[in-house]
Image (cartoon, one colour):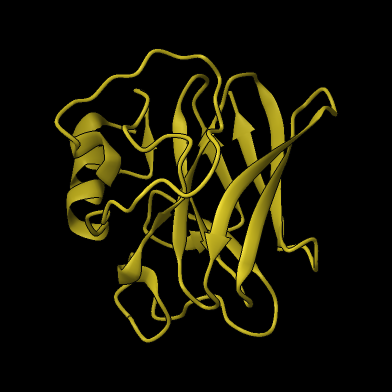
Length: 173
């Protein structure tokens, strides 16, 4: 995708991220941090480490009742824990292609309050777990996925060890 098209999509379809306090342990890969004035944190796929990488941040602009979500008029709802990404067309999705060594914004909307544990399965079938902190029901939070190796990565989460969310797949290459 051309840089101009990507920038147009980012500017027109995505809303700014509201930074929240750190509420969990970092998902860390040891990459160097780059802070480009915070502007990189407003994209869904970036190639520099975001300033809120490893943190779960509340994203009130995505909460239930807000119908201006990246061009979509529906939020994940129901009695399950929702997990999704926004693709380059601004649509919510459960799969995303991510360039190698890039970061992708992931959205969490839990159906109950409690502690979030994120699980990530890499292409070598190694499972990593991350304690991301406490959430409130039907509030939306953002975390980052890092595509550190080529292949298909999967991510899901649970709240208080209960029902798992749907699964998001990242095709890294």
